[in-house]
Length: 297
Ligand SMILES: [Zn+2]
Ligand SMILES: [Zn+2]
Image (cartoon, rainbow, N blue to C red; front, side, top):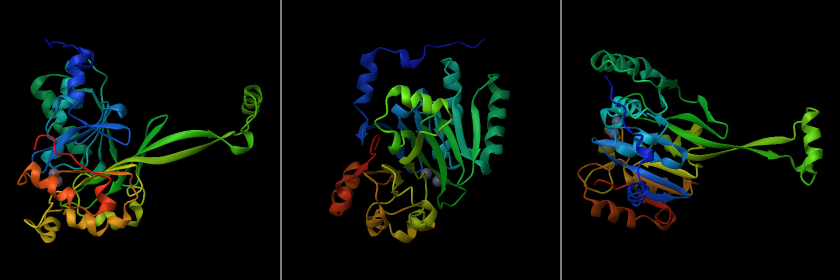
């Protein structure tokens, strides 16, 4: 028989606050998780209940209701069954898992194999999303997949905030007047969508010059891979393996309109100091808004 465990969200506040100290806060969003190339990537936005990729399954990922998978490499998807199983074990709501449409069938098979082995339900809502397709996550949030360039099928995700605003001509009317206009069928609001977070997963720098990806470069926070950071590896090497070199980010610096850029997926060859030195050496237009996720390095 399955043993139900207590939801980790209900643990004492002291343990959760000590965990929070580990994370970053960027543009008002707490950011947690870790990302090391070839080992594991999981970037978490707890205030949105979202995680991007899940190479292993960090404890903090389990509390997130939405999980976005960029591609099928093990360092990005290996923790998926564990994530779903652990939420089941804690009796938490089945998560929504968004994957590239091209791998959806294989992900379904993966869960079938795990169900056959452990006789649990592994409840979740699996959604395949193609490049350019959108999904409404909540009334005020939607996501769109965008094209990235890796050695296997891959995609990134843009999360948009969706807000209803009162049309200018109705500003200043009383509550009752607005209510009666609304009841009479007049469209009194308009919708503002703004790109909040973009997550690339693994990709060459080619996604930057794709004209369809302009919202990626406008998102408030861009979470972008930068597997290689200095001259110890060449740009050619990065491109051959479907990755980005920090020097390419520098070359494209004027294209990024993002308020903040979080670099992830550093090669395991680097020490934390080396990464920090490379970030400190960035030109001022980037240095003032670039963060590096070095947790676990
Ligand atoms: Zn990777
Ligand atoms: Zn990869």
